[in-house]
Amino acid sequence: MPRKSPFAVVLSSEERLTLEGIARKYTSPYRDVVRAKVVLYAAQGLQNKAIAARLDVPRQIVSKWRKRFAEDRLDGLDDLSRRGRPRLFSPQRRRQR
Image (spheres, rainbow, N blue to C red):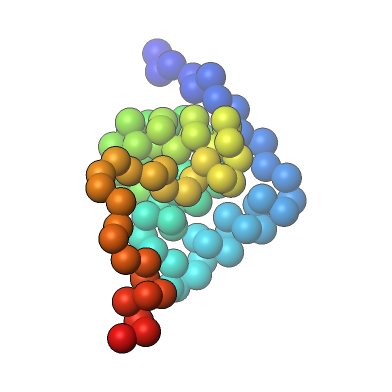
């Protein structure tokens, strides 16, 4: 018997409109479209395994984005900062040359 996700997703009307806009927008990055669709399908009540099959992504990816959305809402769908040496020059400074 499949395990049900402990992170239930209930969307406000503003969140739903924002996510639907991201999912439909032709120029949206693929990663943003997948994340938006994961949340939209989760709000419809689909399980992680079913969402993963529809989007052709691993179940663990669906679980990750469902959890991050449940904890941080739309901000949870943004990329986290990564480790590494900070940039020496800002993008604005590079363009001035």
